Image 1 (cartoon, one colour):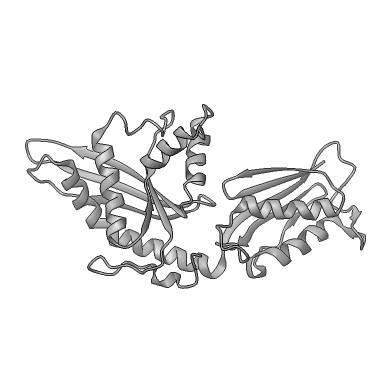
Image 2: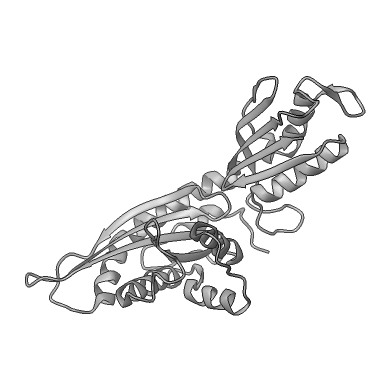
Length: 285
């Protein structure tokens, strides 16, 4: 079981040493609107080299990495990938990779008579919520070499330590306080209920039943006071744990929403659930 308690050890040390316990990281290519993440590397050898080089930089520092290209091939063989929207496919790859963090890398290699150079832009995201953890730009400088892997390696080396330090600081905060999610509970137009409706064995107002459940299930009872109207209840910030305390598996907004369904079922309410990254929407029918 991966333990998140010693997250302060995540900081990469000078000389390339890293802590023995690390989250899984997957490096993926940056894609523009309309580009298919499944094929973005096929037409550009420089991007394939750059992605491998950045993954190598994480590997050399002791992080456990997930190979993006191998993951896509495995999913294609098992027919896991469909022809749904490109955004859905990207999300599916991230979810099924079992990575805790995905690092989106954009590469710009330039060649001229004055010397060749490479620039990389790396952004780390929490795989469960999509929250940004770190963003850095690395530039190789100009060299009279044609090997893109050398240029990308120099660019990565110049920003990697700062990148990891920022990511570590964010993880320390998450380990202490949990991941932040947004919860919105709505009443459908045709529903007979309002937030004031008395429900449950104790005939409490619906809004109070929801808040009481949130208070018990939020990580370390951390959540913001809700915004309440007759047909809507909004929590801007509820904290959930990085890991399920019972199983040790990754915990995400979907699992929090699934647990919440049990509350509404116990109250005899039918609901619909929608999740968008770290935002959970529940509509009472």
